View 1 (tube, helix red, strand yellow):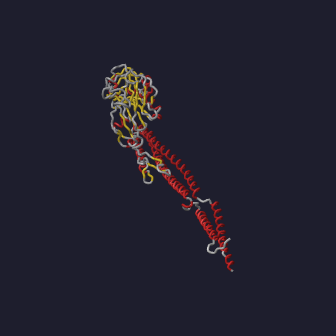
View 2 (cartoon, one colour):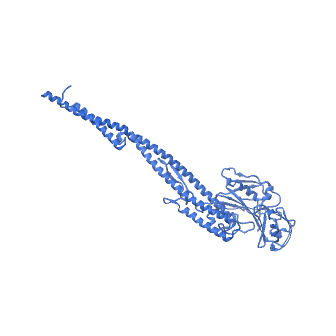
View 3 (cartoon, helix red, strand yellow):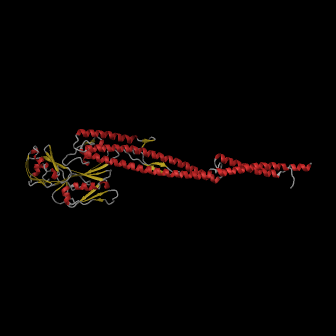
Length: 517
């Protein structure tokens, strides 16, 4: 071994190793004190890049979860408001049912309508004041709203809430035919078809109505077929078979009077039936005929309460003038089948066809009897309107709107009507319209329920994803304390041994001094 003074190689080696150990010890202390394996890019450049990307993803997922919860809050706010609106509609429908019986007076119906008007005001108030963070939810403007519920662009859920004000819900289509009738014979088996029905691209065909059934029940048989599947088609029907003749009952003898095949016998009438002989004779057998008679201003009204056909016969040709039909063409023997009203609980047109009843005609007691072929909900002579819940609280119903809703019996002139449940027909219409409004709100709530379930499922999924992403980041970025503590102890011992080695390297120089003594 050589002895040198200027260069202490042993000390230099000890210094280099001690410096390396000191750096490693500093890094170990930094990791242990921060809890991170990567404190700077030099610690693990590629690992830091991956960890930073995972950190950004986890942070974005956290905000996406918050966005989803905000969306759920909006949906729940709207849902609770509509729940209260449905409660209001249930009350309105109950009051409409209460008004739809002739035991009510005009005053009691007005009181019920006053209650309904107040309820509709509150329903509209809910629609205009329900909001979230300053945004109106139920006025129709909250449509196609997007919520970012992912870590990356365009990972969104779209939310739309329909308008729930009274003029936007309850949209109901009413289509009413003219008063229909036919003479003896000519009726065939009748085929009915309803087009434009969801799920039936070729239209819905009903069970055929036999000629015998139609001759007995008239349009009531048609209405029964339609109402039997109304839950499936969304279309219901009603028949108003009531006719008021245009002339005053004349004095004279009616021989062999029959209604619906039931003999009433010979009746001697006075002008205007002031002694009620004709009315009493007809009403005496109303349980068998299903037809009830009354007079107003001396004019005879015949009404089939259940909507069945009304066939009048007499062995005397002059019976027309005695009854006051006002038309020579309206021969006794004609069967009156009434007015058919079709109701659809949405705003779409009703396309309905009847074949086999070409002899059924529209009659008018103020003109010639035969005015055209049978046309129900299509063609001329059909009054068609779409009515909202708000229309039923407008104060006055236009006469054409009232006609479309089936307000007027045969022989009654069309006039503007009070809206709401102030009349029997208005109460019946309110029942249908409030039911339609309930279905619309239920549909909106159902859609929101589906959106809420979607949001909740998404939140659950991204919550799990966020945990897994954070776990992956932790595996890269966070320090393993057990491993790092072991490293620290190693470097700590090496640092101590390095210091000892340097001190020993310096003592080697003392051997040179011994040579110089």
